[in-house]
Length: 186
Ligand SMILES: Cc1cn([C@H]2C[C@H](O)[C@@H](COP(=O)(O)OP(=O)(O)O[C@H]3O[C@@H](C)C(=O)[C@@H](O)[C@H]3O)O2)c(=O)[nH]c1=O
Image (tube, rainbow, N blue to C red; front, side):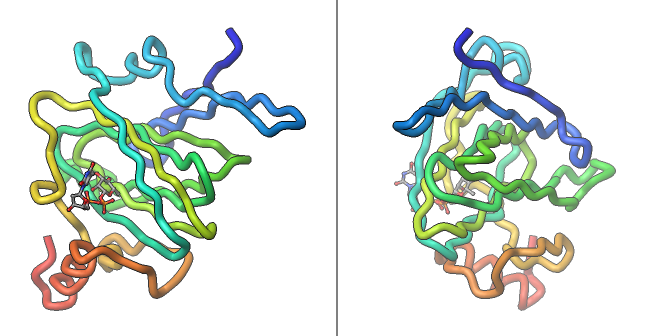
């Protein structure tokens, strides 16, 4: 096959997988495969499939997250620019509850992260612009923003070491940080 993946389970948070695709480069640039159904969907529970894809473009210093829900598997990467990707274990019965793991993703380190349900997902943009891509797999209806859980980006119980202290946030993420300051966090 003209492409292959190295698939590894995280040693830090059980269930998270790190996919490293092969990248082919020539004088024009590069080409790589992000998803091959037969191989990647083997990592999901039987019968579950990726249903749709999302893209979001962000400017430098944007931070999105920490977001999640209890049924969606996310397959995330950065297809343009550079991000610091974070996964937070939000499974209350997990031995690594609230532990986080960081991944640098850019064109030279084209990792793709498979994030199981009940994990918090977040990223921070270090390049001038970045395009984030994710596939979602879930049963039934899509869980939209209003029904997802949101941990404050600076939740002290989690303690992520973000690359910068004053990120650009959405109203949703600012509100989570305000709730956290007032002691009303999740
Ligand atoms: C995802 C999406 C959102 N929207 C709207 C809904 C909402 O008012 C606004 C912002 O949406 P969100 O709050 O979902 O955007 P965002 O802050 O990028 O949230 C995302 O962050 C990353 C870290 C995740 O893991 C995702 O699951 C999701 O929570 O855009 C659309 O119109 N179409 C879409 O496909």
